[in-house]
Length: 520
Length: 73
Image 1 (cartoon, rainbow over the protein chains, first blue to last red):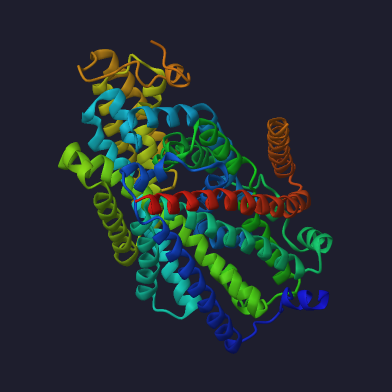
Image 2 (cartoon, each protein chain N blue to C red):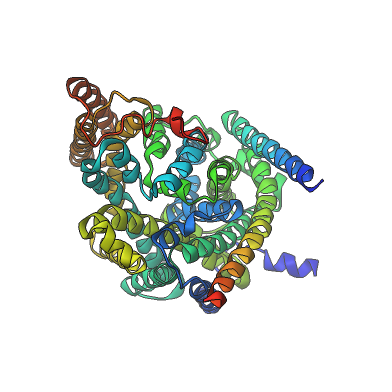
């Protein structure tokens, strides 16, 4: 039995050949078939929904463990698994800060705003970040907020569809376009039938497979070296010192990560939706804090990649010369692991991508339905067919994601720009809604638009001059510029204008919403 | 009695969460990659098992609720 387990977990130094890949592919298809049947059963179980709250927010009833699991599954996508394994393989540990910064800001968001948002959502039937801003500044701010908040989930959905296509081509023998369409079809079917109920439960299940896959990957990477102590020794002996130094990154880029991967989460429309979805205020806070603080899943990719790099340098593993770092994870599991483990890891990789795609698809659909379709159709008309509208929103967001995956060759820069725009435009208006009653609707609107446009123009300039929208141009990132403009405009215009009639300067104040019973 | 046990479990859970967070960041800041690797290896399996157990209980309740609503109609 012990010998059998050791055989299953064994790692081959050389690639096991095309026959092995074929076996892995066949077994993976069998596993995927079984899982699709399970997902279909889950989706059908939740197919009879009645309200928008059911379809988009799981009836505002997600419990701690489903929240914790589904959030973990959704927050780790293809880039976090294969991408960071490649980064660990080619650069070492230093880039891990891109993940660590959010383990400080997401809990802070959850602690400060989670319960207040959960309460706000129930009290005022809120679904999106724009709902929060509209309650404070009036209906006029909904459209620009819709534009800023819808970009990111759409591009991330597209990126995950693209990752599914790449994975299904490399691991499952499908063409790229067929892979994108197949992956999108799975996610769309699950989400359209059972809405957020089936999306969340599928994400939880996918997160379990993803987690087990990541643990197995780390164990396999250590098996390559003969054990934990040997692995650690080889890391120190075989890798350059910079690989093991967490402080070896460029510090100018750290400030960008703190903003774009840290502070961003204070205005992340996706996190607002999680806060609304939780069963109660405590779950809204606790699940988000625990999921971002106590789950070092992100470290697995970096450490695994470094162990593989040490294996290659020590002659324990042959991944071929000049391998693309992004392909390290896939090549290792497909060509160097025993068939059952390889097939399981391949399927768990697919689940990782699908869970992320379905979460952002539902986020985009929620924004589309709440902030565009409902205002356009009118609340009464929209309330007559909430599930139909929800399914339509999922379909439209999914189609946009498919189009992005198929025809937009620059999805990563666009995602970065989308994230920058969201933060640059929304951070100060949202903070003003929480903390500054003197802010006016005119100030918030001007701040949102100018911050977004300023950040966008700077990102485009950096892209054309420096080759990356995320680059520092004249020492400044698009987020720095957009935020600077947004703050100045918010303060300046607010001090020069008065409150509009449909504003509620006190309604969203943190000091008021954090109380269980609203002050009279 | 059950309430006291639940409170104790919650308190212990929070302690574990913050100890894990503190150790993780301590190892990272000091560049102790071995510590980071051992901590990751040791902490993830229990987190995974708790997610399986807790999620299964909640999912069963959710599916039971959905089935009951269906039969009520």
